[in-house]
Length: 291
Image 1 (spheres, rainbow, N blue to C red):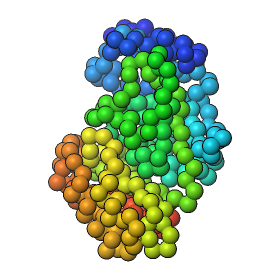
Image 2: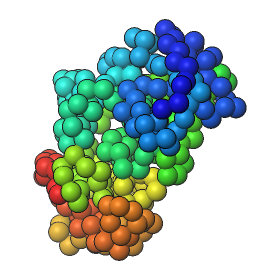
Image 3: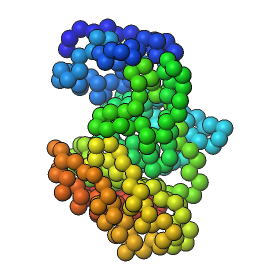
């Protein structure tokens, strides 16, 4: 690796001031699980890294006055996985984290870094989109709140400016909604998925009042599928309807070919896994990690 400057601010405001909106070689670093690999491979050669490890206020999990759960951006994924507050508020997050990479990565990687990296293969983004989550962002021009659904701009791209940092994640109250995340990996369980599917729904009897269907890994960014959702709105939740939703999802999704599989292969996965995830959510069971 080439030499670089490492700065360690003690506050969010100080960290923002150390970033340069006009210099792509100046980057914040959280857990560093992805950035260090990029640096070792020579893909990224920073002039300056601004470490966020010393900002203790960004490592916390608490309940907001509005009933939403708030998670500081520097909270390690392992802490989120082990949190009773998270498990009680949104158990789909806890279940998802148990299948995310391995415990060594989860001990180091952070919530904010996981989201800011913009990798479409990440496990949490589709789940958070299905749950209606938002991120609080701070920058030189002020603070703003962004739905996680709108955070990703493309392949490894987000809408964050170079002098903006995610400060916290907000997961709204879920009431009676049930959620599930399933993924298909073509190699080991901790490998990048060929497809991730997250669903969240609120049903009454045999009818669906609200549903979110989000896919990732097979697309350039985590993508919600409104046409597939329409198949279920106000309808019954029998197997025939779930299969139609899977068919609609496969037709709607714009899929990519990569090392995890071809677009045509992923289309078949979408068709099967969307129906499977919906069925698992209705049964209040995540169905386990599928490979």
